[in-house]
Amino acid sequence: MGDRWLVEVDRSLCIGSAQCVHTAPEGFRLDTARQSHPADPETDANEKILAAAENCPVEAIMIRLLGSGEAVFPPEE
Image (tube, rainbow, N blue to C red; front, top):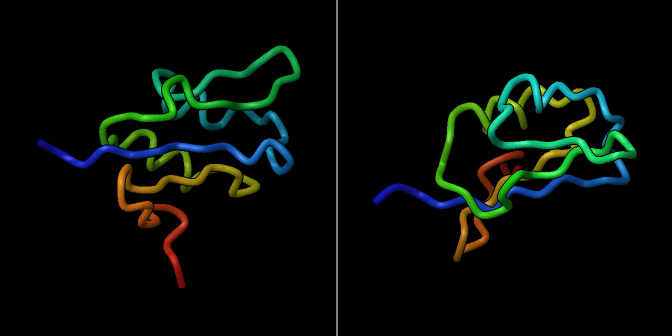
């Protein structure tokens, strides 16, 4: 069994660029205010979701390991 992730979007940072939706359409949705949110906050580890977080222009997407809370993205310094 692979890793499970908790995916969060900091809505105070999200600018509604929809980059995440284009990169991982199964992982993110925009609401009526054009704010991103994860389609399912608890998800299997997924390269497209990681790519969406890495490519977010305002770094609004955080990914942690479900259970331990260890940072996947952004990596802890």
